[in-house]
Image 1 (cartoon, rainbow over the protein chains, first blue to last red):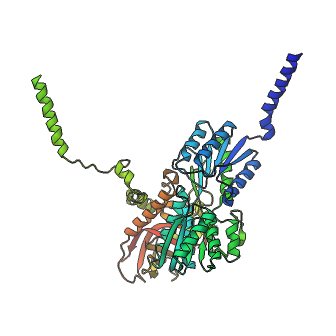
Image 2: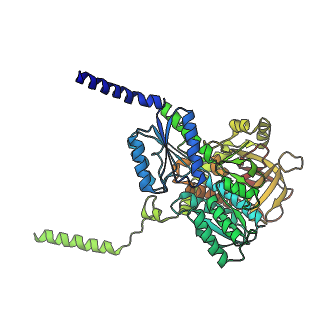
Image 3: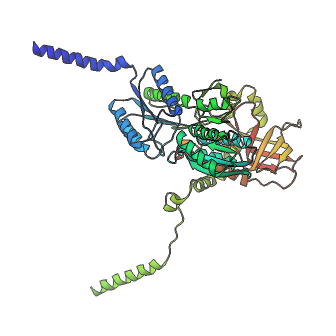
Length: 313
Length: 213
């Protein structure tokens, strides 16, 4: 009697365990790992990936690594332990991430990278990144135009370990340095951070009161710089950002920051999920591993059409 | 025993003598010398390898006459692209076209660092294409029009951007035009252009420019 009951309970337990995944979703689990959602850019990625995954019948788990490679490695182990079918990743460092993605690959779990590259190919299935060089050139051309091709300016750089910081800066300078009357008086990192950018901008402004423009490696730093400029009563300074956030859009519409460059982050995240789905179903995405998506200049002319890192037609 | 000692001594002497020579190897890819190079240097070298040997003949072989493109564009950029263009696989990528033709110089701006020259190809007196003369050449048309140059083969965007820049530099370096006003002269060209919209002006990075007699 006792034995039968216990067996029945176990059988029920087994049945439930076995049935659970199909109750939860037909297609399995997709893990979505990004930097902190404090930056709306990364939040948009997570939201975009999650929405598309659910549409395609997957369960999702959304996690943040806070740009800490060790934490990222733990999250990968969690995803592997949870039996994720695929991982969508905006990574925590071009070098440091290689090992985590390799671990997943060894466990039979394909990774689909967005926004940031890693320094190896052949480990992730897809690496879909914004064409930061093309985007930076668009931003720089607009910056030079707004500056009237002349004057002192400062550049705010992103986090050094991030490839995107270097590529944007080099895109900016490939354009700006062609204009001999554009004079860079300061170039400092604010590590993508709004609060750091505020402090850095205050210091730059004190040392260079003649400054006429600021070109920033991303929108959060542009917002920080703009806040410092406003506080100092220097709303005449031309600020150009990069990302296409709603915050900067609103600032552009209010006559604050002058321009930014939209990375199609929302679509990029959705595309990564679509490629994961294709790969899981057919064994191939049918595309090159590394894909560059073009960016779009945002200024007063089209800011109205921008919403959550996507431009309405 | 004694003979063996002599032999060893002789060998040591020979080695000592060798040690006085300084062997300077040619730098090879993957060697320490290559590792010490900047991205810019490595991509300049890569551009040197492929520009004349592969890219110029590739453009010559695939280029279409400008009117072929103009006609195809009437059916929309995507249709023209599918028929005659090259583009990277990423969603939203621009189409790149390889073009050739001959036209009369209607206007030239050779003062700018980003010097250009406008050509009338159809003979109506209006400019149909703009040729980029540099030294500053904008865009990545040459790199992106070449189907044998694939982003996955490069470490990251920085390398890939430097390659585009280095190919543009090669294109500029190969231009040998006479000084002075070229207005009215006939020029034969081959090159690459990127189009993001059917109505975009055709801005060509030249791989061949010849003043016709």
